[in-house]
Amino acid sequence: MKPRGAGLAIYAAAAFLFLHLPLLILSIFSFNSSRFTVWEGFSLRWYAAALKDTQLTESAWNSLIIAVVATIISTVLGTLCAYGLWKRTSRPLAGSLYLSLVTPEIVTGISLLAFYQWIFRFLRVQLGMHTVILAHVSFSIAYVVIVVIARLRTVDATLEEAALDLGANEWQAFRYVTLPAILPGVVAAALLAFTVSFDDYVITSLVAGVDSETLPMVIYAIARRGVNPVVNAISALIVIGFGSLVLVSERLRTT
Amino acid sequence: MNRLRAWFLAPTWTVVITLFLAPLAIILGYSFLTRGVYGGITSPSTLESYQRLIDPIYLAILWRSFWVAGASTALCLLLGFPLALFISRAGRHKNFYLGLVMLPFWTSFLVRTYAWMFMLRDTGLLNTFLQKFGLIHSPLPLLYNDGAVILGLVYGYLPFTVLPLYATLERLDRTLLEAAADLGAKPWAALMRVTIPLSAPGIRAGAILVFIPCLGAYLTPDLLGGGKSVMIGNLIQNQFTTARDWPFGSAVSLVLMAIVMVLLFAIARGDGEDLL
Image 1 (tube, helix red, strand yellow):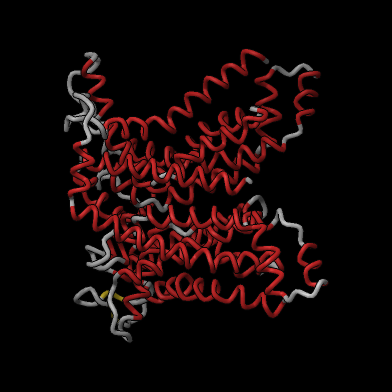
Image 2: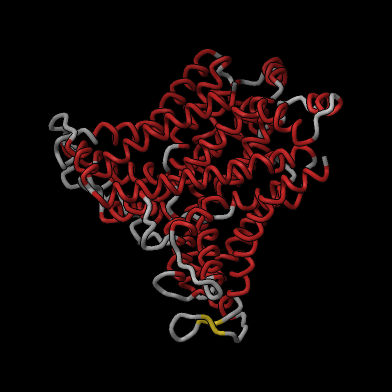
């Protein structure tokens, strides 16, 4: 048993390296003063260049606005939905949410594009921040429902019955008994919704207008032309930012 | 509660119907129409868009998508199984190791794909490294081929196999392995004849969870395949942008959706429904 256990541990170490090394190396090279893949010395020049690039900063700002608004909407709606499904499940709704989660992004994106274009025949609106936000709400809501419902399953349902027996109405029982108990799960869900929204490229690029270019869209456009040290710097910032969000979210989800 | 519950579900129902189901219904409708002169959509309703899929050019793209997704899935299972086995036996450090698997997964998919461009391109880290040590003289063409796409997909979706495999291995009755050992089975025989057959539900769930997003992949083939390794996702995107043939793009999307649904029914009886 012993030698086989050691082999497995060595394999696991290699697998963890495979999962983490590319991001680590990319982050290290974002501090390289050279434009090329040869280490020449520590420098913050690419970070400075990224901050000076107005296309990057404006798109980062757009991404932030979209992610915050979409996260607030999908967290509120998704939490209420999870609570309703926890009381008594609805197979059509749970099934639809599950389907939206596994639908290839490209299909979600083009169907939303087709839908918006069809609606626009009747309304005087165009693609823009609002269409991106609605699209993000639609694909992040399923993540919220899943995380919150997992948290609800750990809650003792009889606590609400006790509250009702003691004279609370249904809303008060939810607001003052169940909601505080699931709050860490709700925050974790919100952080997840924020990351999937901030990161999305495929759906966003299809439903964005001229005024709503997001950070992933700009990164993608640069990356298609090849590797660029400025993108290395932004990537490192995203990895660190998202990494911290996920760690906080995991903490909250498991406490 | 029942009256209030309806109000709790109503907003999400509204979002799901207007922003997910209705758009799918619209492309279902479009897929039976024909392309107009200027890329618009005109009304004679036909099955033409579906019939065009039989064209060898499109069959080749379908075949490549299946091949790339299948190879990625097989590699994910092969690489993920020992890792899941290790984590399931890691005692009180289990959650830490699971976190290590999930952490890169939740950081930007775009950045993770870009990281591989940085590693694999002609003047990238691997080629620079190999040339410095005189192992090769000219850079190897590592980027912009099917291999790079498969690598990117495996890297992206490996956690999707580790999690369900871990879930089944965790629940595995350890006494069965003791029984196998008592009956004279070597560890390898016990692995092949006890552990792997009993983790079939996890293998099935993991395979489908990886195969579905790989089949519909758009970003990875575009960035790491460099437009040469076209898959279904790129074909759909192209029909809605450059080619402006929305009926055909819709038809391809629906065929992809149909494949996804069939695969989902295959795990519906397994772990799929525990999710919601």
